[in-house]
Length: 187
Image 1 (spheres, rainbow, N blue to C red):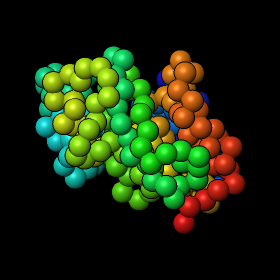
Image 2 (cartoon, rainbow, N blue to C red):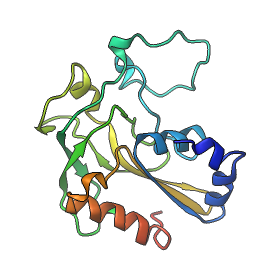
Image 3 (cartoon, one colour):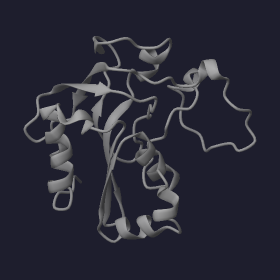
């Protein structure tokens, strides 16, 4: 969690921009990459504005009331729709069930590729319970995305795909990111 201490002063951004591949597993890692301007996907902090166009952070804005902040899921399984043209989805079906155990919601990437997104319409919840407002806020948001940064790239997962090591297709997604990420580049 102390990403700023480890990757402070733009170290990570310089490394990625000269050809490195950073893979972020989970909401806090992806949020750090967004704060370092390594991804255009932004974390949703206000459910009332979950589907609005992203704006730069306003340091003078009042805090978001608790009832409008994203709430965490516990043991929920959701559908995602996969981009069949991404190296990250090699060997995967067009739809994939994923566990979601976080309060991290991310708007789709503007400059990159949204590889796994939650369906905007139709079936979303496979199993479990979604807290008030969260199912609507999740619709059309992104679970997995990839962006180029200079000669390198970042791959971000909104929630850790390695959760309990019991989701074989998620293993495929993150292994594709780890193994092919350094050699593949989608243009």
